[in-house]
Length: 326
Image 1 (cartoon, rainbow, N blue to C red):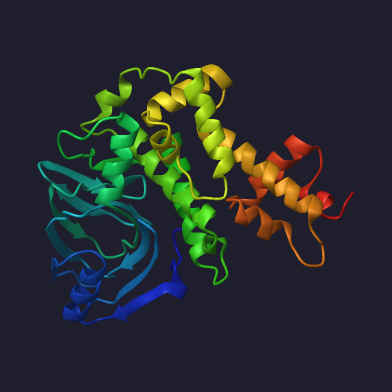
Image 2: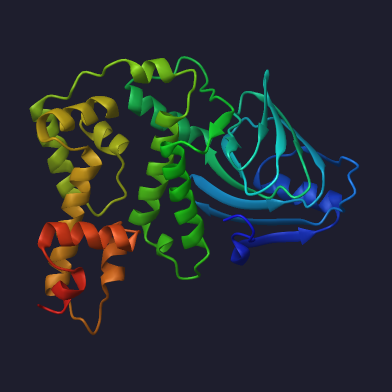
């Protein structure tokens, strides 16, 4: 995504007025100190932003050397990915130089102080703190005994981080379409849940040791109840946490139970259920009135290539062939 302005159809402002820039960015994030750092490049800020439930994606470029001091973010977490250039990030007692290869992940209880160099536009993914903490509690099966604090440097060269960034890019890409598939609640919920769960498990934090401890697998009867719940509520935006909460176990226990007893994850089973619902609709559908893309999106399949491959593997033909009655 480097080299182009993101989310251009979700413009918040383009301005060279420092006070205006500070105020408008603060409305989306939080009040903060913003000063020019004396570099030769003039301020010419551009800010684009789009929200999806508990997740917000933003493109922010100051085009100048700036000093940004929000202090403690308090109510949200951020993943800040430079698309070019570098920024100096001080978060609590840690300091990193953030580049396209090393994103920053400040935690809301750590004091944040940043210096962005000119030519360092960033893609920023913002998560509500309450959503992050709820997801972590459900994954652990216990209330948090201290605030969640991530390692502030996120290595974007690793496989999990590249996969995470691809999901964020997908959300940005859909936001850039006026009639994007993010208007479908299942698709939006799938991306939100995947981004959040992946972040919690891949990025080192003060809860990482708890994740490393083995979780007792859910009993077969609990797995069956979870399967029944997913069949009954497949049309709702469901995460592993939602299903685990419905059957009164932790999400890690549910995942281990599904792995041990079925050989797949809860979300893989839910995908199969929804794939069957898509198949049923395509079999009964009128090619003149419905499209594969619309039906797939209604059941939470946002990436058409992966959906088509999964459908063909399951039913032995392309979804378009099913719709045409072949």
